[in-house]
Image 1 (cartoon, rainbow, N blue to C red):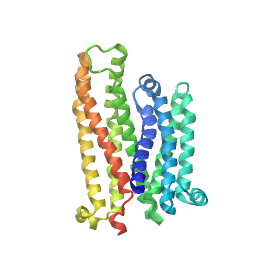
Image 2: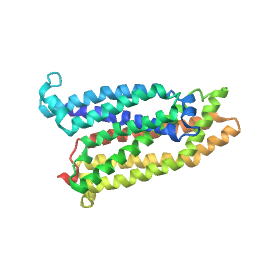
Image 3: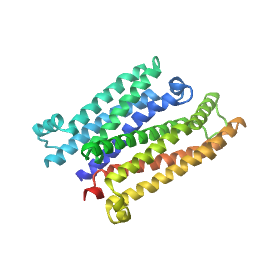
Amino acid sequence: MNDVALVAVRWALYVDLGLLFGLPLFALYAPGGGRMVQRHLPMAAMVAGLACLALLLSALGFALQAAAMTGLPLAQPDLSMVAELFNGTSMGTALKARLVALLVLLLCIPFYRRQSRPAFIASTLAGAVALATLAWSGHGAAGEGEAGWLQLLADLIHLLAAGAWVGALAAFLALVLPRLATDDVAAEDMDQVTLAEEALRGFSLVGTIIVALLILTGTVNGWFLVGPGNIASLGQSSYGLLLIAKLVLFGGMLGLAALNRYRLTPALAQAIEEEDAPRAQALLRASLFVEGGLAIVILGLVAWLGTLSPPMSM
């Protein structure tokens, strides 16, 4: 049961911290910059809620890991051992860095409207630190020497690229959700539709970079964790089956991303010109929902994979 809880909390942290990095980053490269995004997205409320949830999940995750490492029930912790884990281990150092980063994020929120771009830059950097701390408790931190640093760097970049994609998906979904299924669309809603279309069109370069980084760093991670000689036998282990499932779902995300870029977004642009946006927007919304759902499932598989021994460690 403790292992299941650890996976669930780590899964939630992947999603939460990915959004905390990806959403402020989206505000930096979206059309019109942070001020335009602020008009159409409740960015302050979203970041505040995610940061508070991350604090709770981090505390729970550390408590669960401490219970697993000490062999004591969660409700009866050995406080001296917990203090030693917090102050004398890399897991504790990562938690401290995450807590500081989350505090910085919360402090940035009041400045979103008055000093939006500097605040979003600071939030993005703090979100990157918070997300990167997850690598220190995963397989990416298990290597040694120069190869170990390369493995850790690849894992960090992989996490950040995934967070950028998740954050963009969440922003796109927030932009396409409000009152777009009726024929009576208000002028403000049409502005939001137009912003969504511009953001999706402008995401092509960022999206290409994200996909390239995910493939490159995923290949590096696979080299260290699976090894070329174990590829043929992946289907014979739980780790291998989960990895195969992750790759299949990632392929599905790539297919949907291509559909959005080359078919649904141009169709939305044409529909806006013809003042007939609801149907095109509904199709795009459905595609983004599925793509976002696949991303959440993939992060769950990543959290599960982190608890299993990869082929190269056997």
